[in-house]
Figure 1 (tube, each protein chain N blue to C red):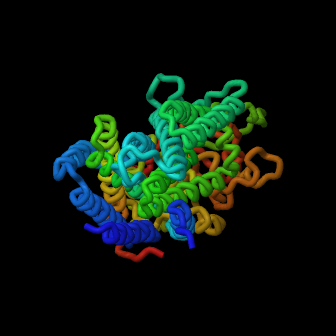
Figure 2 (cartoon, rainbow over the protein chains, first blue to last red; figure 1 turned 45 degrees about the vertical axis):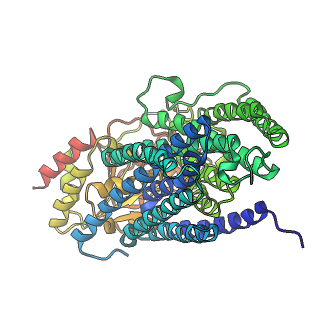
Figure 3 (cartoon, chains in turn orange, yellow; figure 1 turned 180 degrees about the vertical axis):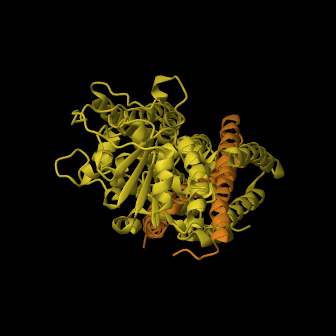
Length: 104
Length: 474
């Protein structure tokens, strides 16, 4: 039997992940759609993995410059995204303590 | 570190990302979800650093470059996250989308320049396999469109730049769609040329055209449609990440990218539905900037207007009050005043709730965050579907800086906004509306709600009016 190509395996992962994403996101409460967007900003910054490889493993000037800049751009999102999400979610927490009641 | 271990750790990180989104199903679990996300990202970054140390011939020196980027970018991101005002969240999100887009483009350029460094080819100097070329082309093109589109969206959202393309009013010109189509075809053509020949010129031309297309597809979309655009670019940034995942054969990037991509797509769908527009209608644009001439019914109709004292009297004697906040409230920075007013009313035994339309803010869920910032308890804040049945049994509804989302014309066949889901405010016993003037909303339609017998208009700046009401309640 011939080996399955990488692209096909990747496609399998891709389709299944979209399926998972679809179901998980519909369960997100509309009140938290803005934090959802900022946290997905942070998660899409996962390209930082590719950027790190570029910054560390390339040998030419072009590769290095591109890599370091890509790491910096992605890092803006990693830190900015998660921290601003945390800041917003803290606001939702304060009220919860004040009202004392459990929301529906 | 073996590649198998690396891949397994990446799998763990992916599961953490799914948990992060799952946590957002309720405010009480959301902070844990965000922590999951951070842990997942930490696992991914540390694993990659370990991988670099294992395979690198440059030793720790390569990691030095990574650290440099990490400190500069991370520092900037942390400062922005700390300082940003909640009303400016849409701009921040648009800015962050542009960062992802640009990062994707740069990674793709580095990968085309040195495929060996990413393990795409087994030896330096070998040509890139055709499949990877296709994926690199897709990742780079989507990244470029995300970048330039987000820059324009950022400008439109900020609304403070003189530059024409950054203004809310749509930019429309003859043959726009044809030009976009031709550019799209040219990008695909150059992409195919790159896939076949691995030609640098084709790759860079394709990138340049993609940047231009990103600008062209966002400029015809009006300021009022920005919630859809922001969600759409959110989706694009995810697909760009997934595209890079394909080219680097990294399942974690594909999973994380697809999660983000589908999340953005769902949010776009929800926003379109709330505005009663089809996705294509929004994308093709030319709507939502200037007031359309469709505003019918110019005959003089009388409105009943009252003072803040009158409003305070009406609400003070009610049993139940529902407050409908619109973006006008946030513009007037009146959220804290509203909270104070609600506290006073609650003290008097009045039941106070808030009703939020999905497009009340500038992005999905924006109004909820703005109310949360003012420490308004989230269990008093209700979504449209949950509270619409309650208006009929409510004594007083106070509409603050909202217009189209409470327009009963939406229930009338033949009206331009027929079918748009609205808050059924007109079913309440008394309606108080605070507006600065009688100007119509984004849709350019007159609102019959204002002329009903049970409606009292309270004109003036939202903050001033509410502060006066607070004083009057005492």
